[in-house]
Image 1 (spheres, rainbow, N blue to C red):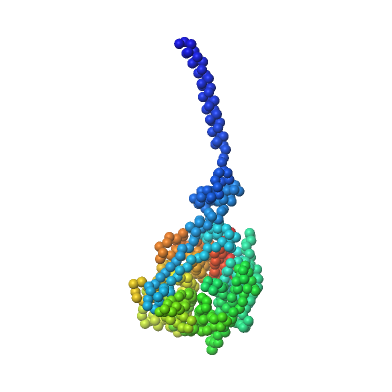
Image 2: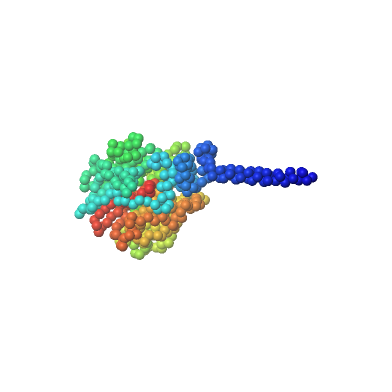
Length: 542
């Protein structure tokens, strides 16, 4: 008994040592495990599993993952991750507006079903860069630079009159000139510049004729791009931009082909300026002074379909032409829908009236016509109707600019406000559908008179400008009950001048024209006091 007890007591130190040694070994191994890192991206998971894990991350998390290592950066910047993120946040859904079918139209010709095609060709195939550009729109992050600066001469002929942006090219025109200028835009780290590539004009237009309106149209049906220029004599010229591969994107001189020039003979009228044009090949609509002309273009000839005088003094006009296919009996017919948005400047202390007229035309004549006025808040009396006549209209007008992109009609006013209208058909329960225009809301936020606006319903953007800032409004569609990323009444504000906060006094300038595309805004800025005219660019591709 005493012998076994002595043996057990002798083994106690050995057991304690063994336990201590096992504990020390486990602790050492645990430290090694804790200190050693396993890169599951490079060594453990396959590419498919890594992308699956990363697909649950937000854009901010992906940017942090890209800073870990080169392998992580490659995986975090994969296009399979950023394309779904872009579509989830920025892609515009399909927009549809229908009217009831009638006996005349077996198909809905007021159907506007469009979807903006999303491509990354201009971003070198990078969906991440495209995501960054659209995010900069929401945050107002941009680079401001005067890409073209021009001193104005005494006769004001060097002053810019029109500007339109197309990819990395700019189309401009100057006062009292029949020439179109093509500029190449180039971005730099410290700013942006533009170089005059070439200029062209119609062969049959005299030098004393000036361009009063021009616009570049993309024709999806015939896969053409056509530039239309309207002149001070009421005529117009059409140029086709030939599709010859990559050169078409740069508007190369050899790709611009003059189709024809239409010279309108005007008797006893000094003012016949073309103020608005719209083209949906082969239907061209032109507004000159108080006349609406509808033309049918066939090869190199132009046929006048119908011409009519405006019943009132239309101060501002916006035109749009849309194709629609209908069926009369068993025979299909091609018809086009022409939408004319106008503003009637009323006198005798009455405000301006906004209206819209829709024409359904064929290749030979007008099929139907509908008109609607937003006069619900105005008194309907003989005095009001009498005040609409041009001879009794006072000289003031409240509307400074008008723009239309279905179904949104936007008007800007000199009281620093913008009114947004919705152009919709009447209730589907009615037998005959008629257009209805109603005011949706009033947009506040400008501190000066709103001088220029531009709209693109497919991109859901409205751009407005005064002498101090540019505001970007989101046109979310209330008919679709869709929640917008940014409420339409809370705009993104970007300054006109890059160093606006450091200025003691705001320079006197005027935003005369405005245009934008997916990654930039361009505007003509005139400074009457300094006799300068410049084209300013806000680039979100930073």
